[in-house]
Length: 63
Image (cartoon, rainbow, N blue to C red; front, side, top):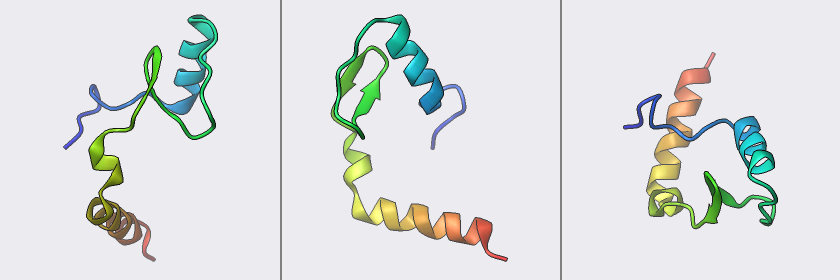
């Protein structure tokens, strides 16, 4: 479970942080841990977790 305080900042904030800290070269789609480019957490590569997330999104937006 992710709490609001612990969640990653929105992409716009990441751009601002990168700008404020100078150049942060990274390929498009890179995972950015404030101040550095890093490998995305293992959970983000879990196919089961991805299916569960998409199922939750589909339930949320089902008409």
